[in-house]
Length: 93
Image 1: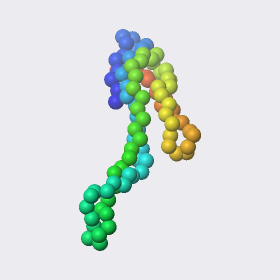
Image 2 (image 1 turned 180 degrees about the vertical axis):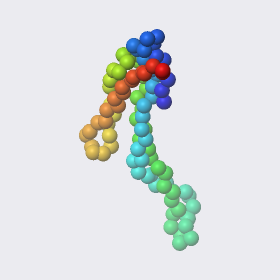
Image 3 (image 1 turned 90 degrees about the vertical axis):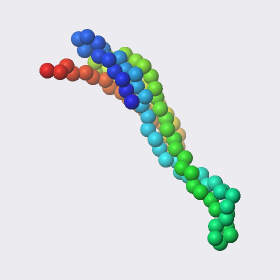
Image 4 (image 1 turned 180 degrees about the horizontal axis):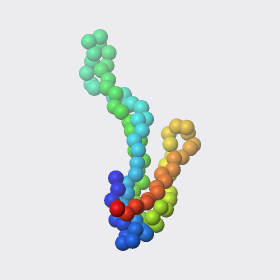
């Protein structure tokens, strides 16, 4: 999500931003305390998510790029992802 305000003349852009993504990591298995018809313990799967978010407020020059965050990724192990942002404003005719 983002909120922005462009300065008079369009030279600067004030941003309030929350950038992120969601990744399904897998499932955790939980016992229900009940039994199946065959007598085995009943279990349910609960999804496990990874949701890195970079939130910030910043002022950029029109067209400027900026690194707003970096996060470790689950796969491949030992790597990171970068959250890059470019802000630009074009005047309406």
